[in-house]
Image (cartoon, rainbow, N blue to C red; front, top):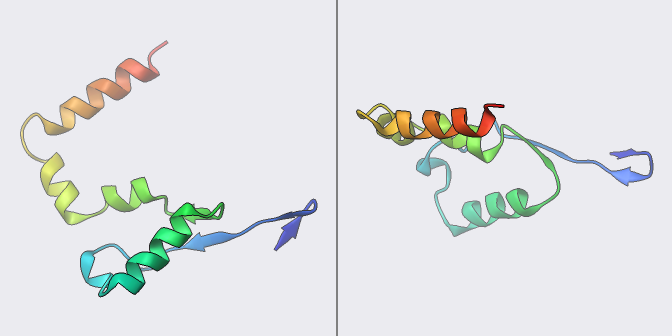
Length: 78
């Protein structure tokens, strides 16, 4: 798609939330190609990772989430 003389691309991920979605190096290479592109990713890799079960399990451990929330509050506070 083109807008104002510029190429615009969107990558919408309906899958890819778990390691089973990347059965070989070919799938991983495809994901890396998309991530390195200038395409708009939906969801972003950060949101994608936050939805991963292993990440959620780790964040649910005592004190882990607080480390990140406290840092975010310090960065975002005026």
